[in-house]
Image (tube, rainbow, N blue to C red; front, side, top):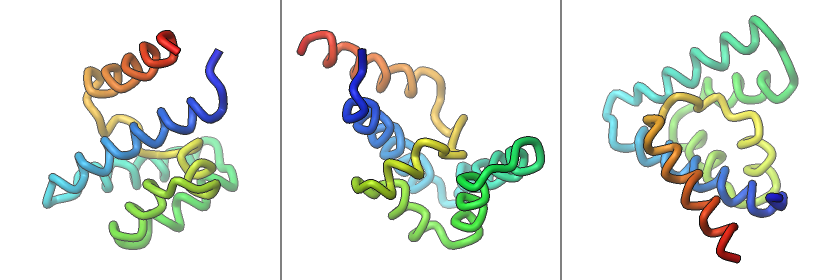
Length: 107
């Protein structure tokens, strides 16, 4: 069973990979994809967390980036409803998940 702390660490690692992907793309296509995802979620299942993301995503990348990488409680809370799905290739995502599973199993 995963602890909340382990889940938060895994989520942060996924966020770091997303940030690296968006940082490496001068067109910031991943950011636009997150905006589209958030808009779709707002239309189909509005929720306060999604509304908060919508407001954040209307800002600039540097602020969004800081929020995604925030290691405190606010960052943890935001990552629980992150619209940055589909930014990583499935193999990249699975590698991170596998690494955390293997580390957890070894402990």
